[in-house]
Image (tube, rainbow over all chains, first blue to last red; front, side, top):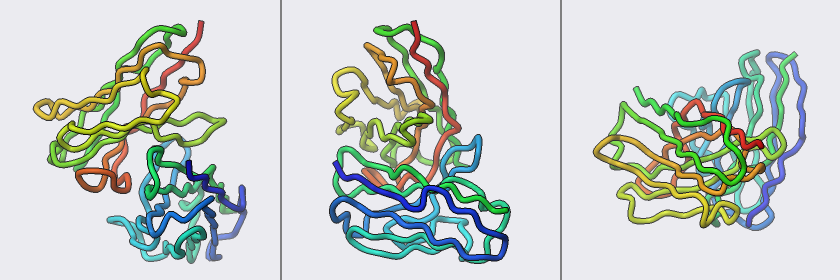
Length: 108
Length: 120
């Protein structure tokens, strides 16, 4: 089973700043890494798939990069609505499809 | 618009069964693979099972294999999860999610979730 480790666990930033979230895989997942946003009380929402492709309706402030075992989600010009938990997910080696434990982003 | 609505959750005793449903609309259901994902406060998001667009293939995580069955009725636009021999560790919010594609793609649409509580 591929283990995904996200860092940091919590990130506290101000509006307008840039957030950098990391996801490390226990072995290569090629490009098959996705990012999801989950706001409190809501279902997860797909942000980025296959490392760097934005899902439909996702603003350009969100971008993804990486390959193999190291991946990054970058959120530019933070807005209060970006407060959420962000999860990475791999679908290269499955079953099982696995998720990281999440990074909580607080916009203060 | 794309909609997925889960139902069937509730409180159930250990060892009992429950069937979850996911009714979809706004897209051609028979063209997409579908997943069940669960979430607990302690373990975060956990993939449970997937079914191919045509129902010919199913895959499960080890901890539910032999106890849970994913199925679909493409004529009714509905996905199911039959859960038998439930355990306390199955307590979670269960989401259905659509694969972007017929097989295993990123999960591009999700339902709002239904809570399953396994308790004596």
